[in-house]
Amino acid sequence: MISPTILVHRQTLSSRIAIVVALLLVLAIPTMPFWASSGQIRLIIELSCLIAIAQMWNLLAGYGGMVSVGQQAFIGTGGYCLFVLSAYGGLNPFLAVPLAAILPALLAAPSYLLLRKLDGPYFAIGTWVLAEVFRLLTGNLSMLNAGSGMTLRAMGQFTAHQREIGLTILCALLLLVTVGGTFLMLRSRQGLAMTAMRDDPVSAASQGVNVARMRFAIFVAAAMGTGLAGAIYYMAQLRISPGSGFDPYWSSICIFIVMVGGIGRLEGPIIGALLYFFATRLFGHYGASYMIVLGLLTLIVALFSPGGLWSLLSRIGDWPWFPTGYRLKVIATDERGV
Image (cartoon, rainbow, N blue to C red; front, side, top):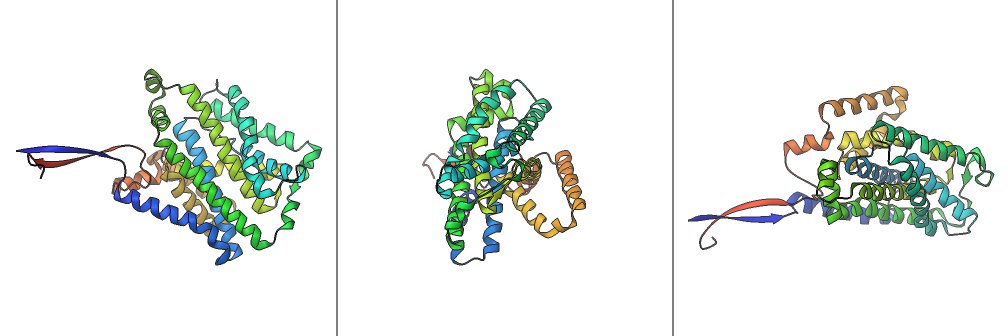
């Protein structure tokens, strides 16, 4: 007599391979100053920041249901916080980077209390207004050199090789915190509540999920991760200004990456960031026409494949990279367990 055996598991062969490859790539980043060129290191720094920022926007919109077009508020805040701590606090810039994530969190908490009653497009407009307020305030503070911006002069005490070592280590930690931290969080009980809230907030609330508190935590966490990426990005640039740090183009990048890659999945922002990064390198010299093509691509994907490129890949084969849910596997066995 045949009796089925049901196994519950999370990992698959594809996920085991993907996680090992991802860890090896992240661990290889800090070794780049010893074998890669300065140009290649700058590209990896930029790509790491793009993945981190997009992953935070995906957490915000894909799981929290909060579509923001003002995440540049926390990118600029994190960058400016690093420059201020270094210039006025006398801190080592590399040690000040983790502290630069605190100010975005402190600003995100009261900001969410103002935005929480808004929904849909009103919430999105509210985040844009918030970012513009931050930009205007920064551009009028004399201690921040107003609209002229600030230069990270403290980096002059380090050689170019030392800077590259520090920046690559920070990039590896950034990916571990944003991508790895999100992965671990989604596999926890809070992650189960977040997934339920993503699928249906009303049903999740009826099952005991505190949707308001969960959204508040997501908003603050996304602000911290975004601010951390902003601090690292502008540390590599050695200069920041209100126009660059609070540029609305940052939100456009996030929307493109996540919408094209796949919203509500960890794999989506990675695929979208890689697509955007290489497309920018190959076709960026076409200027405005290139941006129009990116906008049309985003619109086409949103209309015909709302799940992004990742959903198209999933139709070809079930090969998850970072599975967060449980899977059932039925094995037919006889009474002897064979």
